Length: 94
Image (cartoon, rainbow, N blue to C red; front, side):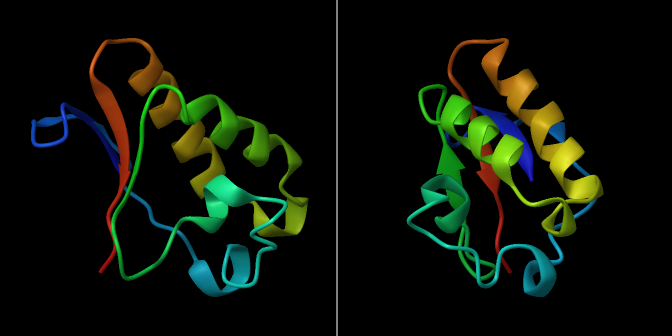
């Protein structure tokens, strides 16, 4: 996970961890969590400044058993992305 300036720009911030996919998002209800449901362990996903608030709201509603350190990392990266213009939150798949 990282925040980049422009889509092809350099990283502004990075998170060291990853998502334990099989216990966090693998079977998440995509209708209830469309932003988190867009994440795929094999593909990249990009969130812009208009989508990040919806992502943060979904993290607020995420059941505790699906949380963990990754949630705090995503929140921190969201805040970095929202602090400057032309920043994107990227989830990098395998």
